[in-house]
Image (cartoon, rainbow, N blue to C red; front, side, top):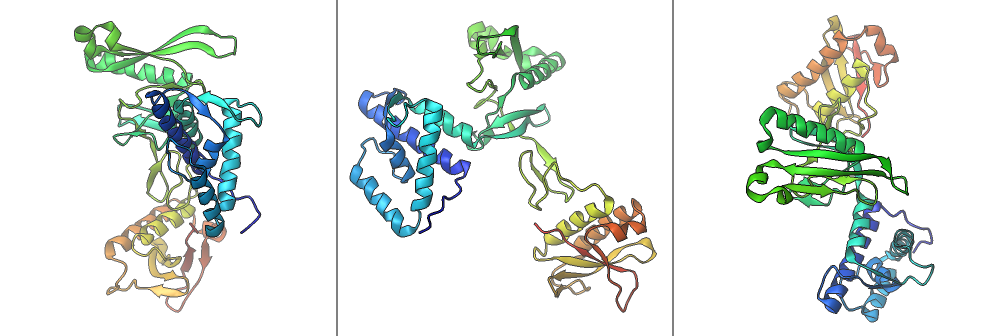
Length: 367
């Protein structure tokens, strides 16, 4: 058992908060019959959550003591203690508990919101090619039929409003919902904008009336607006890496590159595109020999460490299509670069062999 404090991920903390919310919900149901009622919450609830206990309404001291003791045996006690400390600190900061007393009346909704906020990511969202992309904050685990529920800043809400109104002009208001930002132009005593968002579902106006066809959206405690959550088919916007793969806006590509750190030199890009093409059939490939004679580069050998992988006509690993695609990436790079660039391009090394003096080794990027 180690005495060091483990690193606790946002997801671990969020899961503990969600478990606290379920415990509070169960207690509220037992005490009042209303799952949304406020009930007394104390330090024991956090301890039960940190000990990975089920969200039962009754707090069983013997059960969590046993779980805590079992954690000594399986080595998870340092992690659980760290979760517990961070959980208590987070709740005390966010829910204004009074020092060490850790007592208060709270509803499960507050814990759910806090857990969701902690695990949320900053990303971009869109609805196919119809709306977006817009900057938004998203809880990746809060899904409706696989769709996300984004929260927008006021500026992004304005952009969304403009797009919906242009769609209404193009296709007719009776076919779309429109978004409108109602902004007084001032701020309240806390410096927050005096603004809210209005969503109008025009197709329902005639039959259901204005009250049913409109929805007022107020800012949450972070000043963001939940527009279309659990109703519209919001999905992540994607970005395309130089290796050819597409990733969600906030995620790192499988090859290890991020959206903001993409190579720009043609020969450096070729390292990624060639490696990605070959990795599809040989994930262990680490380098390749390229013959650049007459300016028409083609791959002659592929290696996994010091072991040569089959690239001959009867090769068991690579097919003609894959090697042809990799060669095409090389042709494009050489058409965009000077041969002298090879001398200063990372990952390219002049390696002449018995067959040609114009052979270079490409070392694939580490992922």
